[in-house]
Image (cartoon, rainbow, N blue to C red; front, top):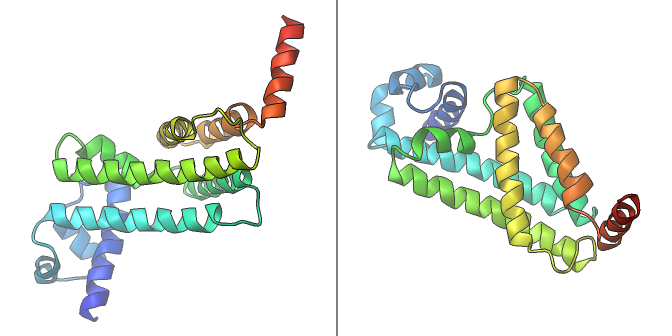
Length: 209
């Protein structure tokens, strides 16, 4: 196995093991045995476990960014449909795994944010990047008239991120995609509404009131 392949194997194995067991419950020997790599090779690439963990985290973030680029960059769809497609695809993927493991960034935020400043900073930077991707998509939807012109898309993007992470956490605990389905239904059925639809709903509420 080449040096590049050895390092990639360690990181991919670490990603899988961290998702299954968490960071603190994943010893280096466990990762080495799963990867079929000798201990000396680990310390050739990583000085300490924290450095390894941060690179595993970056690998997971790269995968999510690739999904963002594929879904949110699909200009054949309206912007809100692109965003919904992203959430739907993750929902299907989580369901195929019986909602186990969840999101590594969310998991490590709960486990490591209070234990390691290096992890906390990297996790927050990743979250901020995801929020910005949501905000970019929402701004395009606003520019095309699919969202109200006075909507603060960064605030709504933060709401999307926090609610999405909460839904994944609930799905993991419940072993059910229902929390995620509820999130998608509320987000696209009530929060992200075109101006004319929002006005119509308001008029209906006034009449019924």
